[in-house]
Image (cartoon, rainbow, N blue to C red; front, side):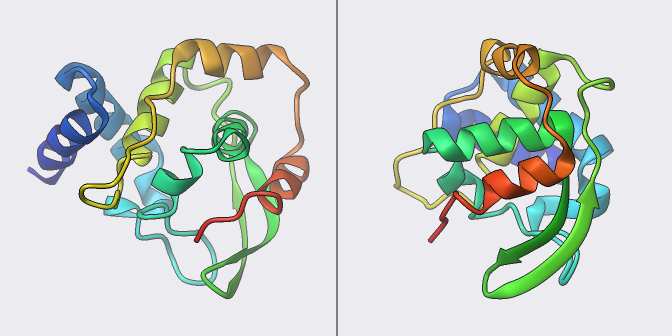
Length: 153
């Protein structure tokens, strides 16, 4: 039930076709929620919250680059989120998910905890993901370095 509500919200907030939003929610539940938790609330000290942060990151070029790189290549190392130091490892999904699946998940995540009435981020596209996949392969620690350049208020 929660997945259907979240998918419907993502479809309405981000203007996605309901099927793409549902696919993103389903894939998030299967691949991401173990660490980032249902609703993207994160796990204290280990995995950052996505709710409320990802919608803001997805509005900037640097944030979009980070989100795509993290999904493709993973992320490892120390990270500062909400004034708290986190140390965790995220696997990359380049070998497990298609460009379209990653775009759908990132679009879903970009709607988690979005501010009501605020400007929503554009949906991620399979082309954006394909371009990043075709570019330089980043190590999880290099992706972590990208995160230091992304400021979320």
